[in-house]
Length: 108
Image (cartoon, rainbow, N blue to C red):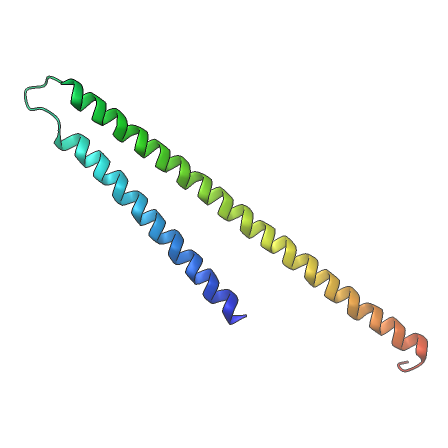
């Protein structure tokens, strides 16, 4: 039981580190777009291309994060269902043992 908790801790730590990395990259992309604005109000072609690529990077990262979160919750749902099935099998196994003992007269 302790191993399961420690593995969950590592998964949680990995998820947190991934989210921090995504946030850092996103903030850098946004800050880079803001700090590179020309002061005279005109846009040159290089700035337009860099802001478009920054937006694409942020969009792709958000999509990856969303997919990761959905897959994580689906995995947890699958784990819960698997655990319930194993518990049901265990209960059924013990119920069959009780019926067998009654049939053999070992238990009244």
